[in-house]
Amino acid sequence: MLNKPFTIMVVAVLLAVTIAASPAAAQRQHGSTPVSRTPAVNPLDAIGISQPESIRSILLLYLAKSLPKAKAAQLENEVRDHPENIDSRLSLIGYYSWNGKTAVDRQRLRTHVLWMIENHPEHAATAEPALRDLPDDPEGNVEILKLWTRNLETRGDDFNVLKNAEKFFFSKDPGVAEKILTRLHQKEPANREWPVELCKLYTMFDIPGEENADPAQTATEAYRRVLDMTLDPRSRQTLAGDMAEADLKAGKLAGAAALAKIYLLSPDRSAVQRANTVLGRVALRTGDTAGAKKYLLESAERGAALYISVAGPMLVLAKELLDKGQRDVVVEYLQICLTLWPHGEDVLHIWISEIQNGRTPDFGNIGN
Image 1 (cartoon, rainbow, N blue to C red):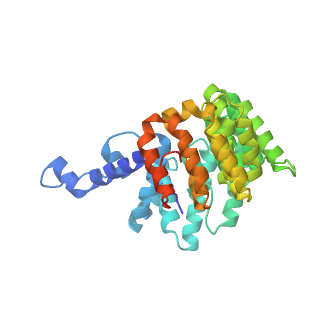
Image 2: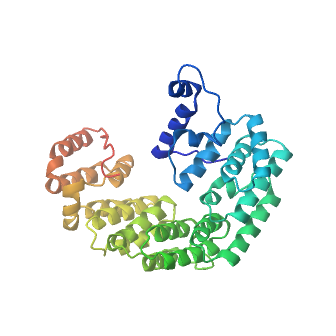
Image 3: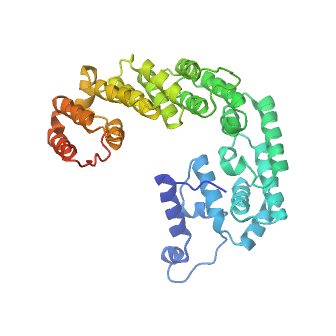
């Protein structure tokens, strides 16, 4: 099944396409009597604007969900006569991904997907989920793997081919994806996309090919490798914190704690708050309530003053401690924040009063 496009830009273009392609729109454009004319290849052309190749691909794949069967048959004829009609081919891939039910549908889907990967691996569409995995077609997926492996061998210097190949191998073979990311970084060393993608890879799969029984050491080595790829000074300062929070979210507690301790040494002004918050949440999840209380108070030490004065205090650890019945330490934490966050004095007093009276305040989105 295809991933639905959720970005505002995609939704806006979808709306524009729907309006522009409607009969009412045609009447408004040409008068009360519809004008007979040759239809556009696809509805995207009706709005008269160009889209980036990646967005256009998503739209073609998504809009094909509602294609009539007769239209799909027409597109099959167009692709047979004009194999390089990529828009029609993508529409067919979308159509069969959404609506394919028979063995014939699965075969047609496989045919179009393999054609795209073999003939145009540089096209943005080949990185889309619908062209990475064929449902209920293990033999087709083996063929996709063979094609991408060959593309790396024959077109490994093509930047766009490398980008699309990385998306394919990310979950199929993280070791290959890691090597591709290194090559992409060499071609675009200032592009922050590559270290971010490498960070995601390590968070999900650890370091490919590395067998280390110590998860803290694994996390530290992963951080070192991503840091080597990160050139932006600000990103370098926050990297350990970003990776610590990602490991915490993934349940990799030892790695999260190790990275948070590295982050405490960063000159980033949010380090004291963020690092101690991660350490406290790890402590709670390992049964160390006393440690979590200590980290909550340390997150409001003098080094956090500049961050708290601007952004307000982080409250996620405070909320988790409240849920554990640790009301006194949360009140103490909020009282410390009174001196660090003067703009929030009124709301801090309200929260303190609610906690002291046995209620749990609604912290909203502050400090999450």
